[in-house]
Image (tube, rainbow, N blue to C red; front, side, top):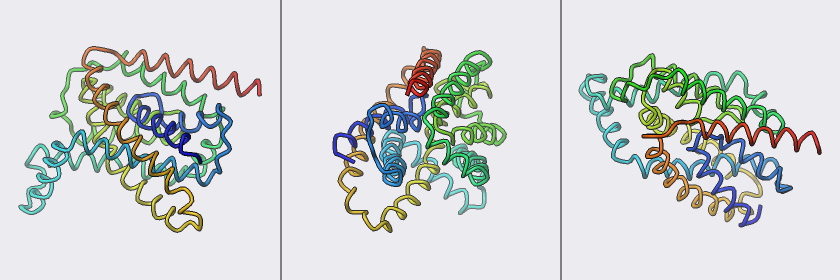
Length: 273
């Protein structure tokens, strides 16, 4: 992997991790369209580790929220009142929302890995993201704020996160959809989507870091990984900031239309090749 490839992939990851258009799809499709011959093992490690860059973006943007949640969560445990504080409850809901993806991911691990090797499957799954976004706009009443979140909401949104294990199904798009179908406002659904990404990204990133450090050629891709990491962190921070402002007054339909167009391009190019 070259430095230029790492920069471009870092930009793509930073933008598409938070915009509801599927980062996994774009990380699969950019090398496919550009004709880059990146070894599969190297590409997988890069794709997961560069997510740590976007994790840094989430932590940097929401550090006040995360600090308040973490402090309240620890204080609740220490005083044996884990659910008294609203921030402590939000911390538990974030953890609860990760369970569906973990359980389902273990059951369908082989199918998910196979999908990442198929640009056609990725293109088809993009249509799924478009459908989810349209459903969110059509059926979400957008009346509730994040303070009204309950454990049923957390599990429901977590189930939508599990759908996004497949490339082409946007994690942010599916979880925002889950939140909006529980009648959260667009912005509240997006905030919870970004906050609940922290434990998932952290776990995936740490596991893949260990895998990378044990690889015999780990040093050979250190510089591209670092470049991709920094690029995705910077771009991701501004992507979060822009999207939260955009969703105050705008719908998700433009992202749905983008997914349909990109999905059609992928299917047509695949069939022509």
